[in-house]
Amino acid sequence: RTVAADNAGDIHAAVQHLVEHGHRRIAFIAGSPDDMDGDTGARLRAFQAALLSFGLPADVRLIAYGRHIYAGGQVAMQQVLETGASFTALLASNDESALGAMQTLRTAGRRTPEDVAVIGFDDRLESAVQTPPLTSVHLPLFQVGVEAVERLLAQIRGDTSLPDLFEVRTRLVLRASCGCVPGATKRATVHDATVHDAMPIAAPDAQETLAQAMSTRLRATSRLSSSPARR
Image: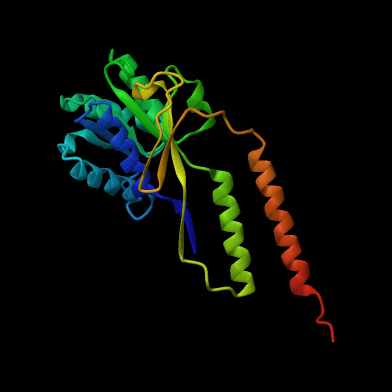
C-alpha cells in the first residue's frame, strides 16, 4: 500500500493559479529522467496534462530536469534560458529546484515575480523566508507519516480493506513569488488540492513528534501480538 501526494491535482492547481495571473507560457523543471515511474514522471505528466487542459502551448524547450536539488535547478533554468524560448512563469517539481532556478534568474537579470512568476512543490521551511517568499504546494509530511503507519499496522493485523493507494490532501500556499500580495485571501479547490494564502511555518520538532508516535503505535501492536491468548 502506498501513501503519496495527489501529484495530478497539485500540479493542476498550480498551473491554474498561474493561468489566473495571466500566464500562458510556463516553464517546468522536472526531477530526474531516471525517475519517470516515480514523482518525477507523475508531476511531469500532470504538468503536460494541465497545459492541454488550459489550452496552453506545450514547448519542449521549456522543460528541463533539475534532479530535485538546488544546483540542478540552477543548471536546468540556465538550459531553458539558453534556448531563447519565451516564458513568464516557472513551475518546479520541488522547492530546491525552484530556489536554484530563482538564483539563476537573478543572475540573468530576471526579477521574480515581475519578469518570471515561480511556484515550487513541497513547501520546505526555508521557502517562506526567501526573497521573495516562494509560493509552493504544501505536502503535509506529518500526515503522510501517520497514514503510512496506519497502513503498516493494518497490514500487520491482516486487514486488507484499505485501498492500495492513499493520496494525501495538499494545499497551494500563496506567497509573493507567484505575484500574490501578502495577505491574499483567495481560496479555491481543484482536484482535491486546496489553495490557501500563506500559513505559519510548522513547528521544527514535527519530525520528532511523528517518530515518537510511530514508535508508540508499533510497540503497542507488538505487545498485543505477543500476548498469550486468554482461555
